[in-house]
Length: 101
Image (cartoon, rainbow, N blue to C red):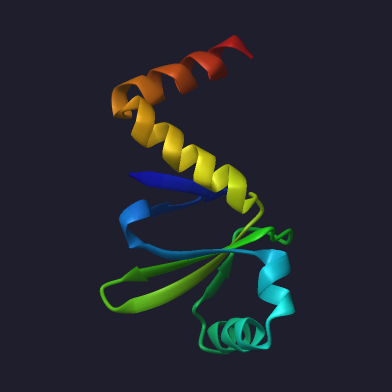
């Protein structure tokens, strides 16, 4: 399943290894060091300037850390709703919601 992180960023849920709230990331010295290293090594990709959640993705042995403007709780709800409703129903419901606006 593809999970939208905001703007033009999406990732495969199977590749997600961690979802970390921005406040939690900033409170931990180890997490701050990990973020600094990811930035220094070019593995950090902010979706935009407002980061609420960090999403760590591993693909083909390489890790990328995304900064998402979407809360960790919302990302979790999106992924759970998709799995519970099934692919076809999820897309039908979201298509209907967008056409009603």
